[in-house]
Image (cartoon, rainbow over all chains, first blue to last red; front, side):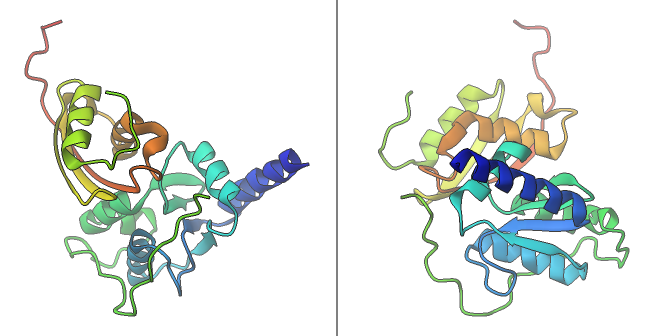
Length: 133
Length: 86
């Protein structure tokens, strides 16, 4: 039974990745990121101005488990463009600063060599409580 | 050195990265939970950024996200200094 659910989660992740040209797996939502790394990645994508889908991995630990098995990447967030794993917060930040991200997204607005935007100055997310129980 | 339940330290991460990736040099900062590692290694040469970061994550396996709560990585390829040795 729970194997079936795990398979369902894996298949849902795979179709989400293939159906959304730009998709971010993150902790929390773009409006309410629950981790600084997710917040920073969302801020970059919003600054670049590309529409993106977002999946909150927190509600079920199996989402992260299956996602990481699929991408062979241990941390969150994870960005996929056109079905391809692009990287996490560090790589997205580097790509933004070099202009690679804008090129990968087909947005050529001369954002190269700008420092990455900080997350919007809102209340920082309260302590991130990991699903470790 | 085997992983323990003791809090991770920047020094431990530095040593493990340098032991785990041949020729690597690592600068690690952190507070016991969140770490930042700047790693250069000849092994990174010709690899994509993703593959470079994976080499670093692979040193720690399942500890990343758990005992090592968060690990930021910047990688730089460095020229192999002793290509003919070993």
